[in-house]
Image (cartoon, rainbow, N blue to C red):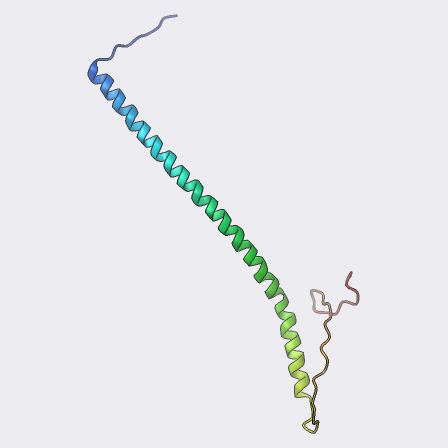
Length: 111
């Protein structure tokens, strides 16, 4: 086993120390930037979770919107069919029915 020792002169030793210190500063800068990025990504994750909850709510509302429009349309059509002779015109009763994807009435809720 041969060991190789190198003896550095004062200038080479100072240069090597300076290089190592510069490398340390760069690594500390990278560590700081990585910590900031980690915090930013955690905040982004929280905001995306909130956005997903809000999106689900909007999806539920818009999913029901066609049924709301149909009910309003039915009420509007029944008002237009009332004779002017009636003293107390009443609209037809609106009944809430479960509908499938095609808009047909479901007889039983478990269908």
